[in-house]
Length: 250
Image (cartoon, rainbow, N blue to C red):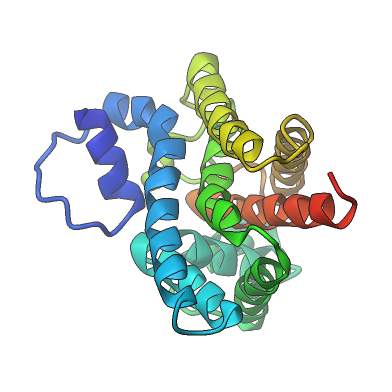
């Protein structure tokens, strides 16, 4: 339970007033709980969406659900997306890219990435017939691929928060993280009558591997920022899968 609470404290801004000893071992074991953290944040987002749906149009409720996710997580992953976009598309050396990621200022590429990320999520949710399940599961999809991004990856910096995880998690923890997320997603999709039970996880899992390969080619490893960006990319891919499934009657 302490490991799960620590994962919640790390990945969200929920007011959990409980002091827990932070050790690398506990942080690493906590990775397997990350999909459940996604469930909790997704439930909060769903509550906001459902309540607002009674008084405002669906599009406005969707916008506030996305905003709620940013508030609950403190924009943790979106910040990583912005930093990654600024660095990767700066056309600089690997060393300079890593320096750009550490810069607290957001550049043009980061702003574009953030606008596209938030805007596309809202647009997709507005098009879905069952947006509640999508709002619930998108954070789960984003969290469950984190093990894939970290497993046997190289951390290109000397120190940082990512140094506690990246390249240090075991195969069983990676598998537990991904499979727990997939089981949760498939359960909800099954109850929702979707036929994407097997296809959807395969698609966003494959995209996560491809994304990792691309980032490693660019900067020689994975960082906390690129993991956050991977979360956002996976959420978008997951939502697109649901939209495509709806479009083609799957």
